[in-house]
Image (cartoon, rainbow, N blue to C red; front, side, top):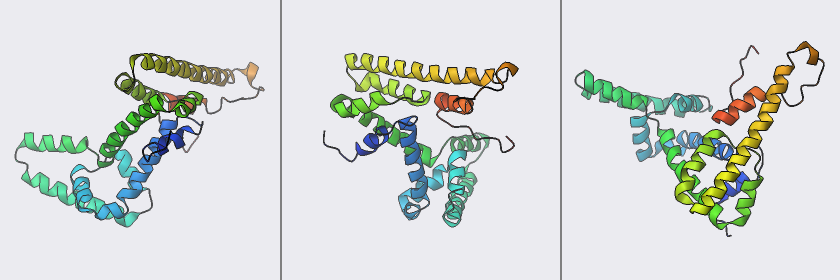
Length: 229
């Protein structure tokens, strides 16, 4: 099957077998969005209007603040604060002010962008899955997938695949999840045993990061380590 612009990122992501391929792909897209918003796109009028109105969630504020581009970040925040000031002055009464703050608190320019991109990516995933045997082989060869992205694939499978394809896809995904959980469970079990004096001299095997890997599989997020640990 001839590659198109929308198939290249998926084929690239699933060409590797190192953790959840969709996590890798969406993390890359998220980083690209951070670079875009603090780069040339910052000066695009339509983008600036939307970032002023929507603002960002904590995660994306943090990523923007830590990307090393302090001046562009300050300019984005400056005009966002001006928009907030103007909006608050127009709100009369507790109900209007409460509604505005709740809307602002639940909004994020980058989250909104990523949600739209995510939908397109997953639809393209199933297009490839139905039409490209090589892509199916890449998907089948994956050793792991996080639960949030498994949930996302199952949600779209029912509408993007034929009934027979959906059943087969679900069975494969279930088998993959169980295989991954079995590995994690064995590693966690061994990690716990290492705190028993009878096993203190035994090798840790692959269990040292089993807590973090389990959290990553179940949530799609690798926990930050305590600096004290």
